[in-house]
Length: 239
Ligand SMILES: Nc1ncnc2c1ncn2[C@@H]1O[C@H](COP(=O)(O)OP(=O)(O)O)[C@@H](O)[C@H]1O
Ligand SMILES: [Mg+2]
Image 1 (cartoon, protein in one colour):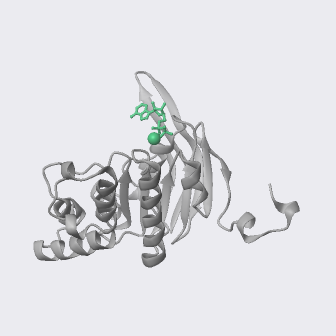
Image 2: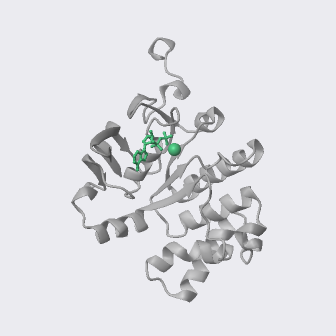
């Protein structure tokens, strides 16, 4: 579904180019759940922005269903992003003046979906995350966990094939974080939405069938698509 081929990103700071992502290759299959762990500053958010087509790589390819997104024009890129990817962030990024339902409608608004259909689909998405009763509330009137549920409804309303979550439990207490993680897994099982989740929490990472580790701009460990450890591989093949 998604393929990264030797992806690199450097930022220009004054006259110097500072490499941040230094050659990442990764294949993500449909329905897969992958966690990315790594020290602060190792390039996780930069990589997520490249995967989510919010930013273009300095070199390398980001392929969705075989097509290199680097070849796409800006509006085409936005369209692939809008249809393929749902985003969830640590700080929720809900618009404070809009109600929960209006926030959830936004990706459909950008897609040109009519009002009645937007409402219908936003209500379904809110129902799926257990927030149907709060659809008229503004973000300020919601708890952190509730805000993240609304953000997740916004991420799934367009039925993306992939959700990118950058430290989605980072601003939540342990119990609420666990509930959000359970919700992600439920949505993955029900709708088959693939999930890439950046986390500092080993408990969250442990729940992901595939775990990769990023260090100083490269992936230094990948537990692999097939998890030998959990599948009960012979001891001598374990790390
Ligand atoms: N727009 C930018 N311009 C210059 N440097 C940046 C920019 N964005 C991120 N960086 C730098 O890239 C490094 C990696 O950042 P980031 O991807 O946010 O890491 P992580 O999410 O793993 O903490 C940091 O040192 C950060 O300062
Ligand atoms: Mg980050």
